[in-house]
Image (tube, rainbow, N blue to C red; front, side, top):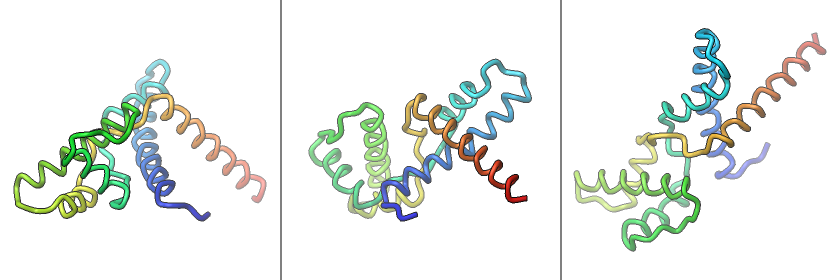
Length: 146
């Protein structure tokens, strides 16, 4: 499967989310929580601390615009929150040493963690549904082969 960087970053983020979600789901099922899928999704969204899954080439112009001009080049609230947090982390790193935005951004992208998964609950629910459907199809395929 040939994927571009944006798709690969989304897949990485979704995979990290699903790992946390599955742990939370097992905990919710063991505890007898009503509507365990929805509870596990909320828990994973609130407790997850994923890597920043954005390329340097995409992040650099956006972060520079936020820091230098004070303007936000994206419209959706979830994306604004993501970019605002990333720019703030870059500014925090720059407070400790007189380094360029590029160097600070590279450091944050390689070593930093975001405060949350910047996706809404509906997307997360759809993502878990899609993953469970794929898992089920794989199990059926393995049963047919055996």
